[in-house]
Image 1 (cartoon, helix red, strand yellow):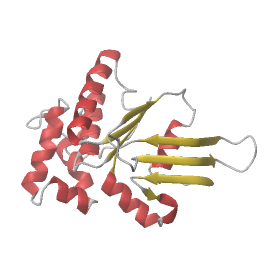
Image 2 (image 1 turned 180 degrees about the horizontal axis):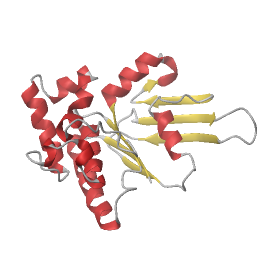
Image 3 (image 1 turned 45 degrees about the vertical axis):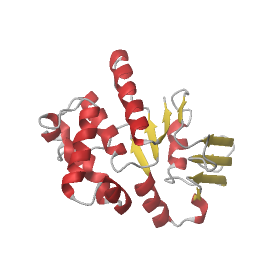
Image 4 (image 1 turned 90 degrees about the horizontal axis):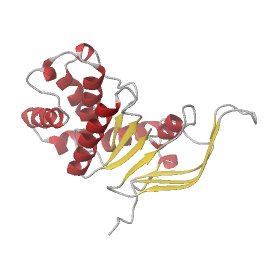
Length: 213
């Protein structure tokens, strides 16, 4: 039985860069992602996939339409309220990973807990529990906490950085995971392995997943 309130609900979205007829434009009449559902959106490069994710995350605002995330209407929120809501409820796997190169893999995974009291409480009231969850996530995504987890992010391979970015998105159990072309830097065999691990962790956390590719 599906939850009545979807994870994502878009209605009559109209967004464009610029103001002329020839400027880039995205229109979405209706889209829903139910809670705990996984959806992959596939489209050509330059088709607006990353722009759509930025709208869903509240980073961009449409000229028209309604965006509801977990039942909350972004248009009724201030900029700071959207930032706080995103930090609490959305884990993002960025296309370029956005890891801090001078921090260890483990510290990069822990970083979202610094910005969200809700995710910090969900992970555990004490630092040892935070570290335990971060290590579990790294291990589940084939990053050994005792070795690779201690290395600075800049020293890791692209594939390893990708897994660290995924672990960071899941820490604190946000309800929604957004993944922007998370396998773009991997070969076919590595893509299959990574996706299998990604979906397994998504299921374990009970999250909803929207991925573009």
